[in-house]
Image (cartoon, rainbow over all chains, first blue to last red; front, side, top):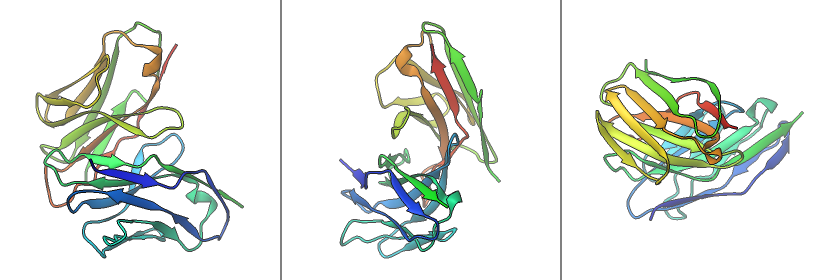
Length: 113
Length: 114
């Protein structure tokens, strides 16, 4: 079945460092791909998405490119801030009528001043 | 715009007591609705999803149940809570089989079973 694999955390960075969180997927069809962010004690927020190969999703300085050839959707940010500290989830949708998402296990990011 | 509400925000219940968590969505019609559980320090586990009133699919066998009495209302219930039911419960909605499949999450309910 379809699956998502994220790099294990936690990831600790200093403010203004470059961020990469790796995400790879396995899918039989042509999934849509998503990154969600969860701040402490809150629900998940959609951060960005890409619906087809070579699409780049971007939001709040974060970017991820849908790479079909490497089945990857890595999250990047050029300069992280303390406020980016959160758990990040990669997810895919296989496009079924029920709209189910398959989530990775999440990567906790801590940014130190 | 669409909003999703969950209540209560936090709940402490003794083992063996009943449970009812409610989720409502505003600003959309005929959404797909989902219940997830997130145990401490762990990922998301899909519990139930619904594509319409009265239509519930269960992903994991357990002592929880779900109901959808109205188009934009989704309820998670239990007759007798277990210690293992503790966790962070998240409700989410998505558009009905549209062009994109992102889900939008509520603020969650923190359940502690004592």
